[in-house]
Length: 231
Image 1: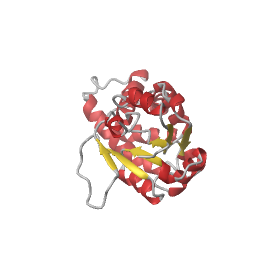
Image 2: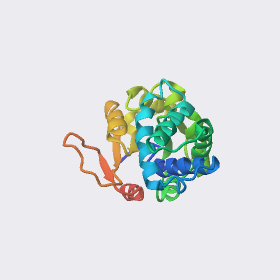
Image 3: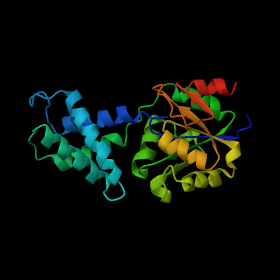
């Protein structure tokens, strides 16, 4: 395989988005002194409700700011669970502050990046906000591995749009044939890479069945498997 560069997705490929989100959700409650125990609510119930609303609200990220989206998620969750508070704005601010400085990584990220960086140019393509993604990479201590970090908010195009992939290729001054893309989403990562004829490695950590039409070049269940591909 004559790849010169490997481009990674960020959330749920290098960083564990779910764990970062959950730590921020609960951390904000603690900061604002809202006790789930006193309200008779388990952490599991609160997290399930919040994550459902947050997933729905985040689809409106082109209309609302991150702070507004998080505020909407807390307001809906607290209303559903009948928890009374006047701390909605403080919860949102605390969540965003905590989340933006959490760098919880997927297993073996440092080892994999250290080995690959010795032989390949590395880059990242990620959707979402610059104010979140860059600090989280810094918190994880991995930003130095990457020659280019392309974030959708900064360039005005998001995966699976081919424009964001073309932009990353231009930053690297490489053709798609010389690059492998690694990501966890068939909808965003695979679809985008396919449009620009870039080989795709599916990080299928949950070992989900692939739809018949999905045919990634490679599929791995652990990031360490990447090293096996290149030995």
